[in-house]
Image (cartoon, rainbow, N blue to C red; front, side):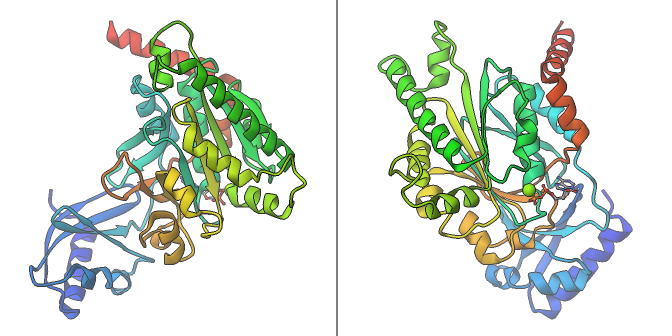
Length: 372
Ligand SMILES: Nc1ncnc2c1ncn2[C@@H]1O[C@H](COP(=O)(O)OP(=O)(O)O)[C@@H](O)[C@H]1O
Ligand SMILES: [Mg+2]
């Protein structure tokens, strides 16, 4: 495809700047997308990759962009430049794509990739998720998309949700979903919820012993269907900090952190999956133990490269554009991948709350009429 005027101009500006910086690179192709346009270049054989990685700021200045993000894609270098006008990623089209995947146990809506293609992952394959992002980066909207997508795709018999929101802000919106069996809005309730989950894990492990290795195998036996549990914790840092300062007063001696840590290690096989969000990606919250157990980590925009490294082990999240722009490290992808989250309005949330069964059934009817 011939380049647009803007793409031709940016290609020229990039080439000019790279040659001024003595970085030999040849232009390969342009990939337009809804939020960023990616320019692929082949680096001269004698040019170290670190040299172009260090040129992000210079290239951003050269093309007049707030930031650019450079990554390696196979044998090429991908330079992602924000579009002058960004498109809003549609929740409805993401939901539509997610509903087509009837084999997915617990579909997690991620939005679109840099090309604009809708993507979701199966939570049972990635077992837990951590979402980090500074205020305004889009955590609440992303959590709303994930919860709405799950509640539309799965019935309350297939999926139970537990919500932890000690700040009593965003998640309490979803308290009336038919799937939600528990909302913990203070520390005492968080402890009760974690204790209950430990009991469920023990009961389920006993039931499955010797006949199934995980919930989907157990359900496939057909005797008795058990629902998945998804636990969503908004502001993990708030929960853990409150708990640390509560001393030994709250329900016995075991810290919420220890209970959570224990759960993360053992609950996957029992069909329990945890999604935590946090505004503060400090190493005191996202400890090595947490990282070792939460393999899918989503970084929305973060204040610094150090924060990005805490979440992803790599720089990059400090260069994101906010409002749902994210980088994901996950066993579902072979490298850190950029996605743009969908925008979920209050009207979307209201329609899911009012009628998630109805929306699911109309998708099923549509599917069977196409199948016929
Ligand atoms: N995916 C998105 N697309 C467009 N705008 C978004 C998106 N996500 C967030 N926003 C905008 O950014 C604002 C802040 O998002 P929010 O989720 O409340 O951030 P956080 O919870 O991280 O503080 C929202 O009110 C919305 O206007
Ligand atoms: Mg928020």
